[in-house]
Length: 353
Ligand code: FNR
Picture 1 (cartoon, rainbow, N blue to C red):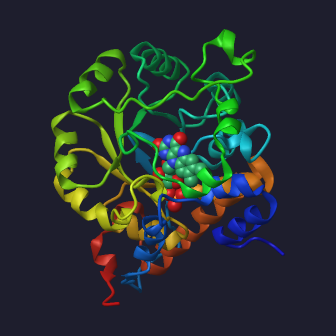
Picture 2 (picture 1 turned 135 degrees about the vertical axis):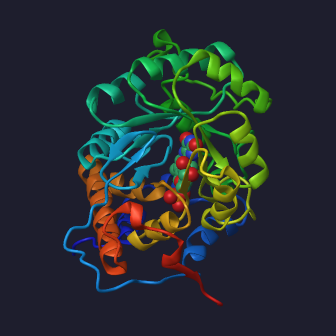
Picture 3 (picture 1 turned 90 degrees about the horizontal axis):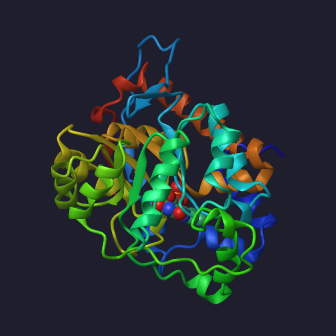
């Protein structure tokens, strides 16, 4: 049977991945309330279609940080792709390049950045950084990413400590994952160390440290994980170039708002001074349309990309991306939007349910 929606890929992945890998991907923090709310919150928003417009030509293209992409849909950073498919992030990067979308590569990639850059040299790639306690290591990572052609730095702010992922605790997953990390080791160590302790994320990193990052790199800085107007205003004050409204797919702090529910507050606070993106719970083309209507410039997919990778590697990720791009094209056509610029908040209303 063909896979016709993103949740079909989810079912396939659940059936074919080991229990511990499946649990790692699907799991949320604590009771998984926010993970599930990310999806449920989209269902409280209804669409207000406009008809009798000429929709023979519908153009899904847009830009992020000045670079053109084929649709406002990208790949969120997720670690350890080699758990899911042998050449992991290299397959993901090639699929993103073929689909013409932005791929945000994680600090916890299981392939070296050099290999990822070499396998998809024309694809738009951003590098996600978990600040490491060792400043020198951060500097090396940032400068390596910059010299390899990554076009922006995504600093994840919602993980000064890893959330309580009960499923991973039960499966005692850590050792296996540590072995997959490559970019946090020196080149000499990369192939020789039998055991590597994953270094903790720097929990002392704060607003004033952003100027240090700005001093070592010319790349635009995007903060991932902002959920409040207060932090959005601070992001403006500190001259960052973008925000990804995100709750880490509900994997960090449980009981925070669904990403789509936090979006409006952040968009209002930045007053158009930077691009705002969203990830969390995007599963259909209509979800993409709703996020754009509420002010997101682009959305990013986390788990669905891993489901595609589990299905057929590079080609599975491409199928996932093309499927949601096609759904988004349909959503635009059926609501009367001929270009991404025509998507606005008049297209949505909040249901009373
Ligand atoms: C993540 N996420 C994540 N975020 C980040 O900044 N760096 C990372 O290395 C990871 N790793 C990671 C692994 C896995 C298995 C998942 C599911 C998620 C969070 C990710 O970027 C994104 O915020 C969410 O996945 C978005 O929600 P959906 O699309 O999965 O609902």
